[in-house]
Length: 355
Image 1 (cartoon, rainbow, N blue to C red):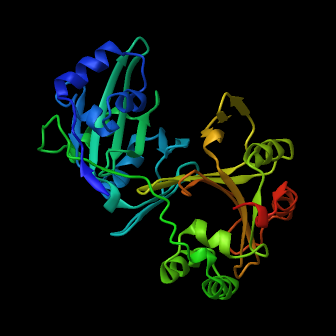
Image 2: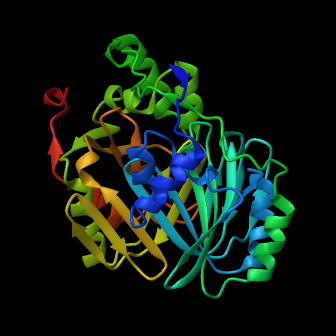
């Protein structure tokens, strides 16, 4: 269900910001029952400039800005990478960044609102480009670093600046739903899924299979059977990350939302729990994961022309994927044996008792 939001006025939003200077934007927006995009838009004309959510033009202009921090998040995980936007490919349906550090898969049609934001603090001015979907949730942010090229950044803002000066954005809100149709309980449907799954030659073929069968990813892994997917203990993600550190095992970490997927590839070094958060605090990679939001964790095995590819996937209470992990490998090479061994020996939950 989609409905219009009733919002406080921009003036009331700005007053709330002044009254709560230390509160994070996302938290303040939630306290006001508005989206983060509403909160940012209320400051247009002050420290915010509205820009077009043109993902292609943005990506092609960012390399000149140099080193920045890229941030992609969902409700339960925040993925931050420091690096340069390079090796950019832009298409109508999707765009790709394949830099040494910044690795993105972007879906431009989801990008609905954009802003250039300046925040003044005792540490100086913090500058960022922030993009949101139609709901007003963040899809991607780019934060400048001390070594960033400010002149190139200002030129990019000038190219993207919108004629719209309004302090109000039109957003919608959706009622969370798992979208589960019950097909995972249909034996014939599950058999058809297993047949098509077993014949995959590329892991990306799964998207077309699910679309053809009208199944969600979560439905598919529950239906496919333990040859291809098995449920893991809820604390598996933390255990896996600690093992990856101790064994110097390079991993791939995917965090995404409807408009962007951000990927880390390489070893990790500094894993720190803090309350419900599990954090990775490495030099160019930060991850902040709400482990208490993980309702299910699964190991998933997908066939490919290079052999089976194994992932760990974590899902929230709405059966939406929070985060996904693989072992690092080069295209055309088989999966790392140490990664496969790690995943296959993590504590399991018997599927028959995991309803």
